[in-house]
Image (cartoon, rainbow, N blue to C red; front, top):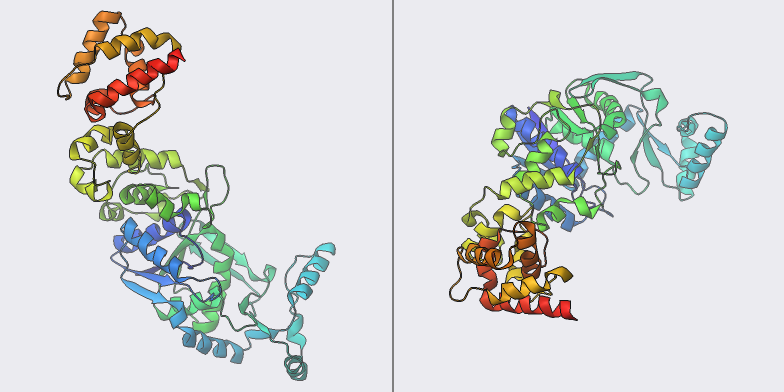
Length: 447
């Protein structure tokens, strides 16, 4: 068994693409197969090395090991050999229409209530007409002549699928500038590298019908590859995910401090009947099953991902994260704030809040209480006993309890409604900063 993940380096990898990478890698591992990373970089104008590096980094960060690596840009000769074979068999034919002419044809068919598919007019050209067109400076694009049949296959997710080829335009395989397009290059690679299973998005179903016809034209191996199409992944608003939507790119998730184990675990179960569970790659692969996927689109829920990420962080020791924390953050601080963070990037926020100046907040009815708190502030070395000692003193002095006792102090000392337990957090604020913040909170109420 051999699978491949074949991204185009024309933008940042988004979670929709990463989900397919996870699916292919897990399925290959489950069945002791080979997982290939193929960089589909035949689009010279849009492909960029920086995006190739981001693909490598994203997969390595997620913990998805590939067994083989291939770049389509290194295989142009293989595509040209396939092109010659298709030309000789009459399955690839030149077309000289301009974009404007094709747009006009499509619009005309729409007005005639006909499906806007290509009319195959160029098949009627004589050899002389083709030669004359090229002599006049026209360069053809090349289309694949589809069979007049219905392609059927048993999809590993969608079940019985069928594509009526007569309802599709003959696809362009080679652009006028000689660029080999995805459909042809992908089929040549899949055949020559022995791909047995392809897991990709539902938006490729029609394309699969075309590719099966192309596979048969090139090799007569129509049933050599098994397909699985995962239902589309939507954003929280129900829109289709885009690789240019940076807010949900893998790089953004990484920079925001999400844990790769949480992201991989979430994507592995997204759209299935199984609840997300924090597991390693091998644990996820052990019982990975395509039959658990729903046929309906799945929504990428950031809140659900953050909940899983939070659970992941809460199990991590300081030694596991210290290399990604500000160097000034000690082990004791990590242990204090760990239960209250969703992402690792929040550590810097809480450290700065404890160590730097802030503008404290206070409510008008708490002025007298904050003055009492200032006067009762414990002296000496602070530790986890300082907060309960201070609270017990204030409770006796003010008569307050519950939220009316704790909330004004948290606001004045941290400016936040919620946060880490104060008994652990207070020592990192320290006596001098706590005194200053209480005085400023009182002064702000007076002004």
